[in-house]
Length: 503
Image (cartoon, rainbow, N blue to C red; front, side, top):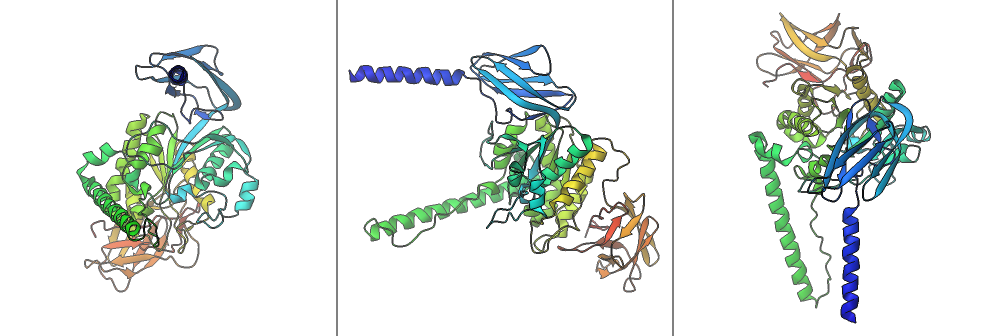
């Protein structure tokens, strides 16, 4: 009798297992409330039984599309989308089971990634570093935008590439915005207000993370420049395993000495999962690459500031890695030059500045005027989102007359005991916010820098010092916490720079 019961239970288990396996399943991104990229071909994908036929009815067209799962049960199909509008649609998927996706909008989709300053939410969380943005209570009250949709990827790390993430699409409201990325929200809000079409924001970020964690394993392994990164990972893993072994040895000895009781509290070593190379790419980026989007905004660099020279190679390699995997060409990639803070170096801002030349279709928002010397998480995220939005509106959405960058150093001319500096993005001229221009230094052949006098001369800056009779180079805002006051007429700050890149 027991045998028959067990056999019956086993058959039910097999039946249920087969039924579950046969169910068509969709990734978290393909769900209710999502925004699909407008006026293009977008991917829909998922999993089913091997060779299963899937019929997809799109709410914006009369005909349906069909796709057949491969031998592994994977399926993907590209479908045409109309121009963006505030009209909600549904998608019906019929196979062994039926799935209906509701409240779908067509508009513009942006990936928003980086470390803690991108993760930093709009709302305040007591007792944490999440202090809320400037005027956060007012921002939360006014955050009712049903045509802006939000998706936060739950933080996760993996040594292997994953196929899905944890998260869900929500409409932008006073409730949902509290925990959503502030920079992403202010960026998306401005796009929505200017473009008048739905905006989808996918936030995938984690505090304290380095760019190599967001780069794939094969890219890191194939470039000899990144060998030191992988060697450091291996060293850290070895140290962790040694600490773990010591912990278990001490734990065993403690129990043996006290009749299996612990009188001394032993702390198990913790492994910071997000510090290792490629684990965030595997878990938080790779599962997104099927999702058709417009572009990326990025706020990261603080954790790489100690190796700024390497970042000049690593950051562009990471961007190329993403573009290669997404297979959408050189999509827009707009990023934030990190804000002043006592723990940072000018070299990392220089690496970000130089990346404008090595990353095609990129743009950089300068934030030297909105930092906090004592807080690596400045609360003025509105300005950051606005400056990123300026770049997108001008570069991606063809508002060609919009000035989207502050002054960027271009070249110099030496005129006896003075140096004349030329800049881009100063067609309307310069502006200084207070008194004399600050943060300029000048040097001769000895490369010893002295504070310099700087004067606006039309659309150039003339720099000199009585201590340097034969000047050769200039640097500007070249410190961890500069306080520059040079802007263009459009109130956008000049990027820190140095003219001698060999120093």
